[in-house]
Image 1 (cartoon, rainbow, N blue to C red):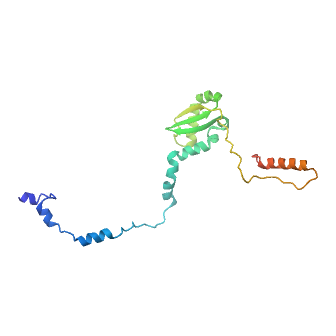
Image 2: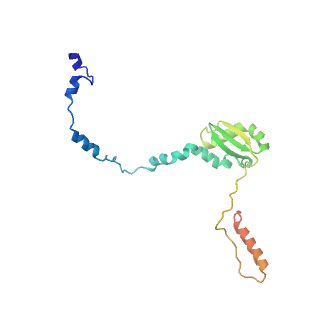
Image 3: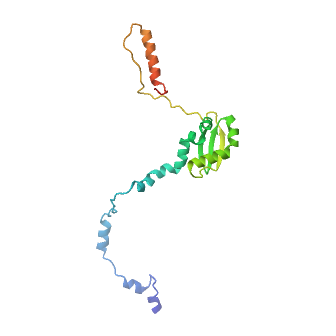
Length: 183
C-alpha cells in the first residue's frame, strides 16, 4: 500500500487529500471580473523594423527585383529588343517574354546572352530559362485612354469670322491635349 501512496498518480487517495480545495466564492469573483488587456509597450521603433510587415503582402506576389525588372525592361535588354519584346511573367526562375513573330527565332538563339544580361543587371541569379510566346502587340506601350473631366480647351475672343474662330479653337484644343512634350 505504500507504493500506491507515493506513485504520483492523480487518482490516488493520498494525492487528493494533500490538495486543498478553493472556496467557491473566490472562483466566481475571478470569472466575473473582466480580463485585463495585454500590456502594450509604447516604444519608438525604427522604420526598418516596421517595413517588413507593410511590404510583405505586396512582395508576396512579385519580388522587388522582379518588379524592377519589369519596370526597367528597356534598360535591361536594350532599346532594340525592347521594341519587339515585353516581359509577361516570372515564375520558378523562368521568365516568359512576349515577342513579335519574326523576333522569336532571333531571341531564341540569343537566349543565353539575354539570361546573362538580365542576371547581371539584377545582381542575382533571378532567371535561369526564357520562355517565348508570340504576341503581335509585344513591345508597344499601352496608351492610356484620355481622361474625362478637366481637359484643356482653347478659347479665343470674338472675331469677325465665326467659322475661322471655331477652327482655330479646335486646333488650339488639339494642340493642348496632344501627348507630345511641349518645349
